[in-house]
Length: 177
Ligand SMILES: Cc1cc2nc3c(=O)[nH]c(=O)nc-3n(C[C@H](O)[C@H](O)[C@H](O)COP(=O)(O)O)c2cc1C
Image (cartoon, rainbow, N blue to C red):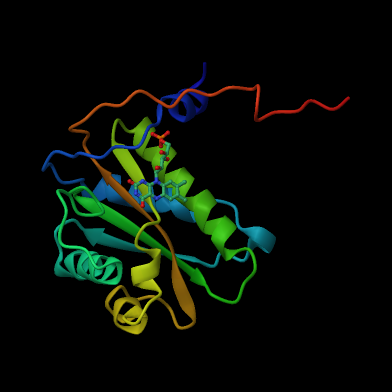
């Protein structure tokens, strides 16, 4: 199995991180992975906001998510105390933005796996990011004009291990000849 196939096979969502920060070089490598991803018509409309874990803006997003859900704080925040959260925004009016952001998110996740790091793709904050506080969050996270939240990826050193999910060809694949 080559390194790319190994990273695909061995990646699994990490929901627990050590306190160790990522190095500047690791941060740059992960951002490169997002930006090197393909985009429809080579639009390159994905913007990456690299947020240090624990910064107040992440707490504000968490609070807004809980407020919308009418819930109190849970055992974990949405990024599981990861030392870095990459928030991907994209041009709101471009029809492939969500797909392009998903591809970039997977690139970050696979790059992280190949670097011995854990990652978690995060969509649960979408309602909070696109709700009443959308403009505040977009400003704080420096989204370009006309950009909207698409997806986030938390990355850090794994404090938990999880077996990759099982796959079955039976219900998910058709071969047509
Ligand atoms: C688009 C997308 C959004 C996701 N959002 C969340 C999320 O908000 N919180 C979370 O804990 N996991 C989230 N996940 C992770 C999935 O729950 C996870 O990928 C799935 O359970 C399979 O597990 P695995 O990643 O370990 O293979 C998301 C995954 C994707 C692809």
